[in-house]
Amino acid sequence: MSEILKVDKAHLEFVLEYSVRLILAGKVVAFPTDTFYALGADPFNLAAVTEVFRIKGRSFDRPLPLLVASLDQASDLTSDPPALFFKLAEKFWPGPLTLVVPASRQIPLKVTGNTGKVGLRWPRSPLAMALIEAAARPLTGTSANLAEHPACQTAEEVEMQVGGRLPLILDAGAAQGGLASTVVELAGERGRILRSGPVTEDQLKEFLA
Image (tube, rainbow, N blue to C red; front, side, top):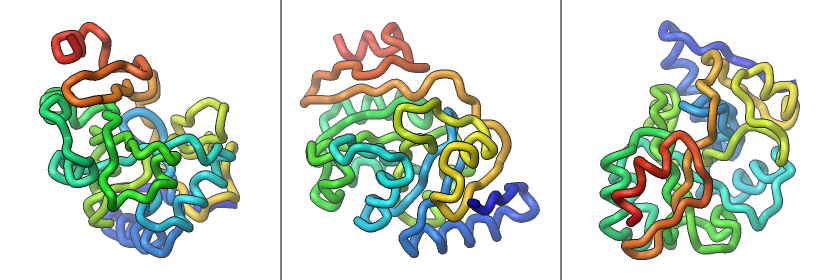
């Protein structure tokens, strides 16, 4: 069984310290974002990255998206980000838009699914941002569910799907749910929608024309 830890303002400092200690030790922690619950791990720790794939039962050729807490942090994770990257990020971040860009050399190839590309997102979630800032690094942000199973909105749903496969689930109530983030792949100053989501094609039209 995974430990389920309730998150409230009175104990937030302890929750962050405890969670980050686990993450920096190579463990995986589930927490809610502005869409669904995610599996957070240190993307620079190959053992931790491998554990995320194991927990989900995910194929190693599928990239893991990363969550960031600032545009500066995101730009450091890309290789020569195009102007379009900054235009989209400044318009839609923080929020449910994942931008797929060439990964910088600091990101392990395993994180990119051996593609050399990485999906980056700045979530509109105070808890997610606090974890990223406390860890002083991006965190993996793949959904906290078994591969090909529904994404989880609650800690209980996470426990039902992957409980026992990870040490800690942070219960901060139900995530917003709805649609998973919109995914846009950038190639230079051109972009294409890989997955439709809350940021609509109409909203993106002026940027991707």
